[in-house]
Image (cartoon, rainbow, N blue to C red):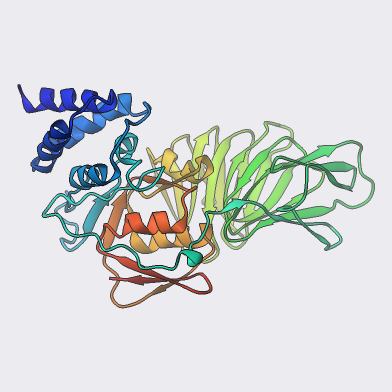
Length: 398
């Protein structure tokens, strides 16, 4: 039987829970000897179709050995211009259905296709483990008073300038009831590290805030436009209203103008670049303080803004840009330090580098619902290790 056909047969046996120990060993051997990567690609294609099935019963020790062997490979960049010392580690999504039960429920695997190396588990005190981020935010009202939304129950939170503010299952909803008198009042929703939140603005626009983000907005949109101020990362679904264009101001960086559209903005103050990814509709972006040089994005495009420099990328990875909103980290083409910044925000950590940090590029996804220990144990399969200390300090070591 041809190797590809045999692989399919073994995977089907695995999925139907009828694979014998000998067939598991054979499956391991087939993939482990696949220097070309053809069989692994075929396995991923098969699992893409069948990967939603419930994984079979397993013996944890045997499954750990099988998964470790199947999911080991080391690849150098295909680009001959790329520095050869850069390592590329892959997280294969479709093996999760098979290997997830071995280590963590959502499954995270780094592939090392060369000689198998022993995995050094992170030495840690269980009491130092860190839970993933959760829903929560602080609402600052127009008078400066603050409400902690993490502990607030469902119901009316406050009434502001003719609008009723209701908290419903982690979504803060502003509903205009009557035209407010006097000057427009502004509220601000802020998420700390380890928090995310959702807001429905008075016009029906919905905003998902990632960790360490802030959105300032009027409690009622009056006049010819709808303008909000934002920092951090957020996904916007803007309610269409041609009579009132929607504008997002990122202080000292960019201004966006839209009618009705969906887009993601990544504009953290401690990051050099900001990224705007358009999902649908249209958006015009200009540099703060300038009226010329505006860029109009089309769906699937991404603008990288660095100071006065604008760079538009066509056929952007939209799924990567909005993965956080869907409960995932997407590390496609992400370096170690960029990856750690994401973990730092989501797990409320202080990350410190000890020694020379390896130049590693990662590809793949992992769940944002994992405990930190599960994430780090997966990352230990690369050439980098970790030590978690009191005070949520994470030491990164080569």
